[in-house]
Image 1 (cartoon, rainbow, N blue to C red):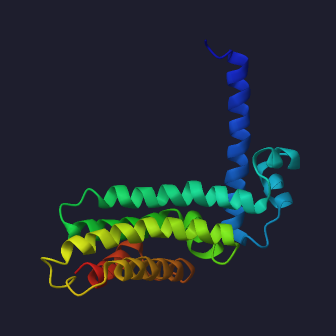
Image 2: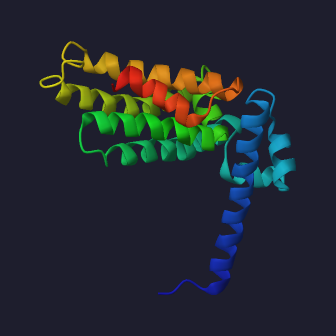
Image 3: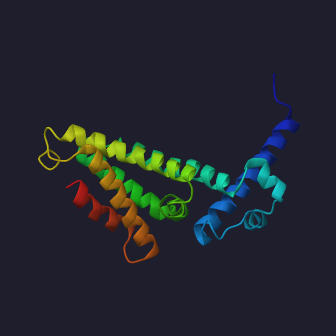
Length: 198
């Protein structure tokens, strides 16, 4: 049975309203910080009522978690998809590191949520941040695990430690250079690849 056109229009309006809220929240969380941003700030910027906000989210933190899951998840998915196109472990590691750095510079608002604003926010947000980072770290660890048998650089590396080290170093470097301009994404990615995927 077909959905009536009136219902389709209503659904489209509801989705547009949710999108305005999400875009406003992302801009405010990234630009002003989670703690300073209020639900009133979000609804004012989105030009919706407070009840519209609560139609989609239980709280400001719930909104932040949803944003982090959607946007941070999409960023990590893009990194892993790009890395998977490499022909060997060196190329996959380089592609993954480069895609992460470039994506963070292109989507600095999302990077700020993932790397800065989510740290220590709450147990639920920390768990989500760790889950997103673990997807990247596990992919790196898997590449190292396979490379250990035939690549002298990786033969003495603990895959799990190396995976976490890459994610930690790359995230920290991106966070620093997003707030202290002076390097471009490609140069930063190249420098990190020299260290982790020579």
